[in-house]
Image 1: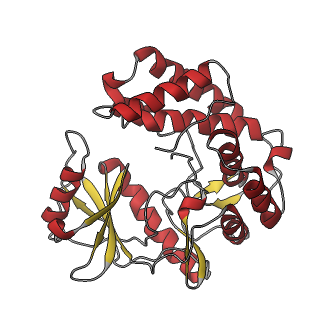
Image 2 (image 1 turned 30 degrees about the vertical axis):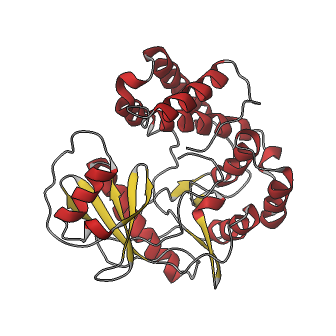
Length: 316
């Protein structure tokens, strides 16, 4: 969810296996050690796995018995999303949209954690830039609806879960403030009139979710694909310009390739505010045991309370 434009990890492809596994609720914090234990329970060589990212999913590179990337979900609530991500990957492949491809079919649930496995990508030729993302979004936004249901892009649906995971690590008054802000923006977003034709969208459209390989740019992180206002995908970069230090020239390149600046749309401020609310709550889930997350959460929530749009946020 975090909207920082920096790279989180090497680009990857994902998918999952069909092994029977226990379907029980996880307990305790989601740590690298926990994720490695889940890999071991799934029969993978956890000791040799290389951690690429740790957030809602722990992302590992595995070399044996085949070079793949595996995503270990934080808890059972992410299983349905993982299954949908695999369907999206297959659908994009059918339409020849450059994107990550599954290495194995099906989601494995191990000790309450959904696992998916993806093809390993070649080394990036360079870092992706906003213009690369814009070209891919044009392809996605030209697609018709897929033959399966996609959810609405409910930016705010994770707020309650993230605040619950934060627990006592964030002040109760701040959690209450974010819940109230969530409710206000949910109501405002329901009344928006789009400029673009609603339909499939990526949902977390950032350059860090693009990999530039030998065959050009391709999309990563398909878990937030939705069927909703396509303006959602464009507001992400507008927020990056305001909050995360994206430079004006890069944003102009994005607009030039896509062909429209979402800031011209009156609804931009509403989707921007909703995304800020979600991004603030997203950091909260990392606050227990992580002082850096607590500091970043405090910075973000204070800037929202003070309505200070000039405060720089930092990718976490």
